[in-house]
Length: 280
Image (cartoon, rainbow, N blue to C red):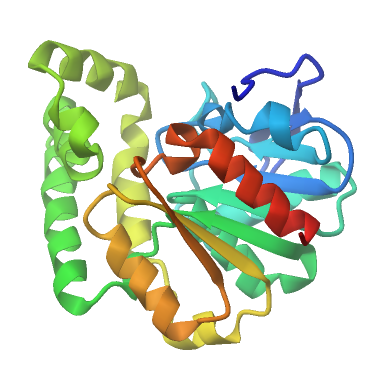
């Protein structure tokens, strides 16, 4: 069974370049793995990785702005390829980490890719778990994603938080979300409402996040991609694009799992991460 807690975990903070306090959790000892969660989840996204990975690595779990109860303070030029990279580097500097492995899920994958592309000297190896990189999608699929986000953004800008979150969860929630009754859905939406100020900037920046075929071809960081076999509709297209551009990147698809594959099949995913980072 996968353990989910580690008594040695400590929560620390450091200042971002714009003065915002960035929270992060440190677990274990050894070479550093920096772990970047996706939007609207928080550090708990990696709860089933902590005990296993921390036996051989020092884990730095960075809280993205506005998550885990932190203040939602975004600069006017917020972007995953600028603000989020600076926040991660602030944590690395605070911990005296010159270079690190990366494990990133969903939208955290956008930050991880940008960091590996723009600051390769700081990254050793990288695991991307269902990375949200919309610009790699075929034009038709990208247009479909854009239309869905347009409806979410319109609802958010009209201050209809319930409709905005309902649209977001219909978009990314998968079969588990669709199987819930309306009462349970509203309970989940109510829990997400403190994150409402992030809906528009996160959605827009993901749509605008710049990643080109040349970026993928030029990336020098050894990379492992992990996918579930029952994920959101756009992830297989991103997986296929990586396969066509970088056949040398390792890729695995895990059965009986969705977008949160590292939670659904934690033991298997943890084993693959360890093998990749330990070079076995």
